[in-house]
Image (cartoon, rainbow, N blue to C red):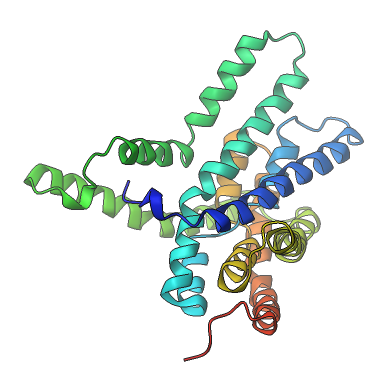
Length: 281
């Protein structure tokens, strides 16, 4: 609702979201081919695995990391990516999973498939608030921070409190997932997803962002580190929504977050060598 749409860094957004979307699509195709050879695999599994291999922890880890490494300028670039992160990737993932489920029920009419896909895409706990804020922005309505009436300020304070509660609740959700599902049998797939997310996706995003879209310097560094973030909690929310891969998603979040301590240092060293980090103060 507060975002200045005219000042969005369009080269960075295209340089990140085009390769990230292609990575999501490729991960979905790879997971679907693996599912074909596994009898009894549910149709929602490939897209759920693709989300875990693509969607990073851009808020809880991404924001403080960008502030510490890239400074205020880099944090502003990272925040622009965060603003569209869920809207672009979760919308695409929802469309993929709904199409896979429709493909598993070939007798379903086309209009029902389209209607269900649109409904599931819009009525999403991450996508719907982003669309509402975007609609508010485009309508030219005053941002919530400028409201002066007492009831309006109370509403803003309530929303702010709910927003601050999101981070600890996400951590609690992951802990409950570990206690409920365990990690037995999930560590192998989780390690594969973590390796793809932490090591392969940054290579792909960096190569496309630099080679195709010409990103250099700080924008390239922000894009690469965005891709190098560990699996985000939305991967678990997505898995729970379709009731598949909950244990694998939970384990992937934990494994990738622990491994990020080492991989982040490696990526930052490489970006420093490439001149994609701000000079030390």
